Image (cartoon, rainbow, N blue to C red):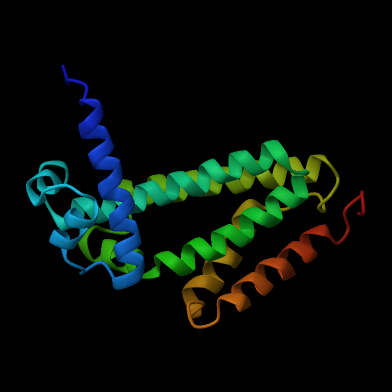
Length: 190
């Protein structure tokens, strides 16, 4: 039986992941773990108690980012018309991939591409975009018969083949272009 963590331990862990995410984004995944602990206002021992290795911390940051992307999609679906939710999610996905390229490269060097970490994340993103596409198609705001795999592979392929960090606006333009294509032939036009 696993004991529940104390509230302060949970706060410390969450703060470490938050600070690490910022540090990895600004300085890369090889930044100082001691600096991360200091910025999180905890001792380095606390960092290592939660994350015994750099890899464990990188994985926690990656999982947190995927969770945030998925939670954001759920919020979009609840607050926007289906096609707008899909369009915004695609923009967020492109931004997400651009900002996580170094993180994903590091993770791929430590785990295989078919690891639970990647297969679970990929599954969750695919399920999310499939739900958004289905809702928009049922609302008649995108054309019927869109295969979610085609959309995710188009977006993901663009992101992987181009350095969208060098020109993040290009990624947004491509996501908008894809969305325009999805709207073409819809039964309801805005």
